[in-house]
Image (tube, rainbow over all chains, first blue to last red; front, top):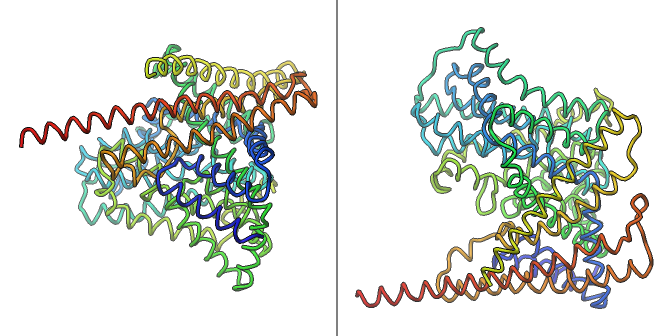
Length: 432
Length: 171
């Protein structure tokens, strides 16, 4: 490990990020600069180019655009609308009802889509105006929606868990997906608890309870959307489909539903396909350049050194997990979740494994942790989308967000220190 | 310049939409041949991977043209006038140089190398060099778009100057 190399890598990356060079390019440029210190120009450039291309050469990664595409098709309102009506029939009558409805709807949407951004925009654009109509503050509704949307990345299917599987060098996607359910539900419940208390304190109105008849009617309306969960996750868990195949089937299913609900016409398809390609490419360029960067990190044996340093500091598993969590929380504030997972998995996963943490469990800790950063400025994609659909501002939404951050951090601690919560389902289904 | 950008945008947009459409149909075909025909197709896995490389790289240049790539824009949004212009040019120069050196030069090198070694893919028997052509192509498009972005920054700067001038006159 050459100190010069590490300083060049760290400084160039930080400066490029700070002046506003897009993250993917910052990663790529700092990687090239570091390589040039020890490798000749020609081979260095070719190596980075090759890492980018071969990094994308993966059948598994193709699941990501498909889940994004399915999400875009579901985003058009028909599916989100029916899920929200069902959630409302179930929870609308509780104190703080609409806040619970928002969280549950986000969780249900999360269970059929793989993205937090899709969840935030689909559920938020419908729930926002409704909550306001019933007297909820706009910023409060937006804050609940933003944090609840992160369950989109924890509850399977989840694009970021696919990225983690790739970065970890082959932790089973099926195991990761199954492991996400209970922690995702825990996050949802924690958010409901805090949002409920806040709503009661602010004396937001409580709607009348819904009868069983109405609930079953709403359930039947939402059933075709919910069946998607059975097709996708059932297919993956039973081993009938790979994640990519399940995602392609989800696209077909969502397309049929969206056409049937008359949310889209075939003429909208080229635009939807293009926007999927562009959104995917943003993730893929990050994947490509991050893979080049992890290669140079490994070349400099940085992961080994970080792990030696950490273990030299303390051998206490609880403490090391706490340190890793604190580092990741800080990283998450400044970095988007995809590059963070790609860069820090090779560094932290070996330490965790050495301490006896199950890799599947570690994936969930990491993703849940970085989800909190998605709701914080300056870099928080879910925050931006949530604030955007609610037409409020980041400054206004910060206050109601604070107690919800606390709820997420508490959930993170529970997930970190109770591995069974993550590992029970994968073990039950023998996916480990 | 900006007129050409529109034409390139449209063409690239159609290519990207088509690639994504083919990718979906391709994997559905894989599922169909396995379950319904019970005769798994031999090429779908490989085609899917190569399509993803092309979607990723061409899409990345399209996203660059639309300024869609994630960035920490605290500094750019705080600045106006000349500092904003110079920072914008600096950012585009970084993108331009990365695209030129890694994607175009490194990419062409990789293409030539794999073509010379005569590597072909296992199922489709395509020379791998053609698959990697996505690298230089994407690089060229990115360079084109970053020049376009500088032109846009210049227009914004001119508008800013005109505004300042008008404000000076009214005072």
